[in-house]
Amino acid sequence: MSSRARALAVCTALVLALLVTAALAPLPFSVAYPGMTANVLGDDKGKPVITISGAGTRKTSGQLRMTSIVATGPDASVHLADILKGWFRSDEAVMPREAVYPVGNNTEEIAEHNARQMKESQDSATEAALGQLGRSPKDVKVKLSLADVGGPSAGLMFALGIVDKLAGDGAGHDLTGGRTIAGTGTISADGEVGAVGGVALKTQAAGRDGATVFLVPRKECADARAELPRGMRLVSVTTLDGAVKALKALRNGGRVPSC
Image (cartoon, rainbow, N blue to C red; front, side):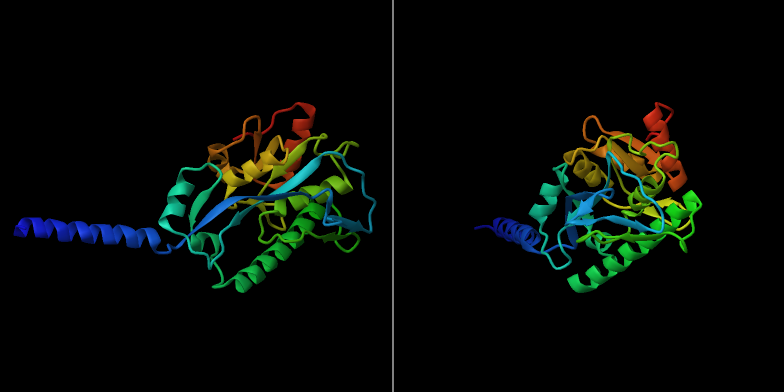
């Protein structure tokens, strides 16, 4: 064998070794999928998601569904083949692990962080909804219960659920208009709606569970359009007040902010 042939063989072996190593080595990514959705106007595991005391509540029709994603855990091994598969599938998304799990180094720490975020989100949703209606938290008590879900992204839907149960559209009708409406977005105590992650996967979860309308933070309209289920209408929101007005307009055939 000539020296040139030997050099070529050595280089080929090195390249193959690198490719095999890259294919087998775990990489710092997570793979996310459409998660569960839950109707905040209904029950979860036999308990009402929203329980209100100190004020009369309404019977509601239609659904307001919060949405979620699920992702491979912080300790899971994600390899090159998983990433390539995720890039070519519309129902999977490959994300840097630190984007999915920005806090905590193990499952327990992350679960505790997500639980704290969920509690803060519920408190903000309650304050925003009661402020929207001019009600005092001293007079109206709200309990929110949703098992196996963490993070702040259900805030908008919690707030809308409280508004619908207490006041509807203010004219004797449901905010939903009898529809199944899904959405996502954080909420601040003063009603500002914030961006979240995984919107394209959440629209798919919503479509799977029967939603025909999806409320999305305005900054994430492009992401929401990326894999939008056929027949689903996007409604762009920036505040709780804007979301309430958009749902009223949707029911009455008025102008609705779209993406």
